[in-house]
Image 1 (tube, helix red, strand yellow):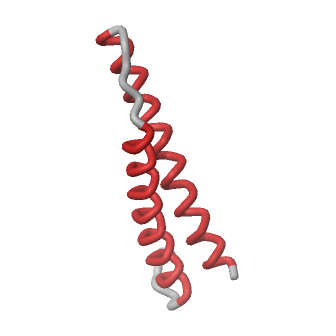
Image 2: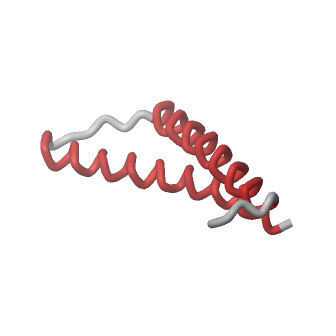
Length: 72
């Protein structure tokens, strides 16, 4: 059960980190140019991509922990 929760947490954490990075880049763009262009479709795309990456990482780490690989 803990492995499933770890995988789900990795998916959510990846998505949250992607959105934080996107907001940080918008702030940098605003500081450089004086305006910014926020596109909701690109934010959604980054969130989905990070969710897939987090899922792959979470499932991989969960499998390593399940099979008792050293270091996990």
